[in-house]
Image (cartoon, rainbow, N blue to C red; front, side, top):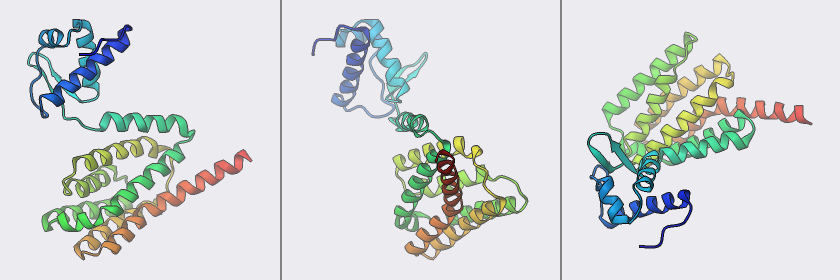
Length: 242
């Protein structure tokens, strides 16, 4: 084993890397139990404090799962921590919520349009019926001037889950959280909420018709009202700076 660095922070990082390498070398999978803190201390030649801090850092990244009273296990290895960090960095660096929202909308639209063939191949009749129920409820709520945030989220998460790619589901959830954080600062006209709700029904129609081009067009129509409004806000902000 390589010599540990001198500073506490570097030592903790080295121990964390050693634990990750142990997981790889032992071919452990999510849910598998790790050695105890004492066993890791002896195996890695590290202090108990360094091992404890390394475990804490790896837990924050979902690489390990500490179950108090039961032990430490290999975590789910989700991308949520990384995506949350990148999203927060975007909020800090972009300068405006409108730019963040534009970027999120771009990513969501590109991802859903690119996955249109898989949606057609994987969504069955029961799942399509559930999606249509959500879309109809969104339209009814929009006509009543009521928000449909929960239904909208459920609709898009259902689209992604059936594809069977956990990373896509995690990214969709992360982008949704960023959008939900920023959206309240953007005042979208009521008519656009109705158009967006109706676009969800068009997505279901297109998937049922097994028409990839139609699905992609419906996804674009879904995001168009919000994209147009964001573009207007950015142009107004740019004009104020000139």
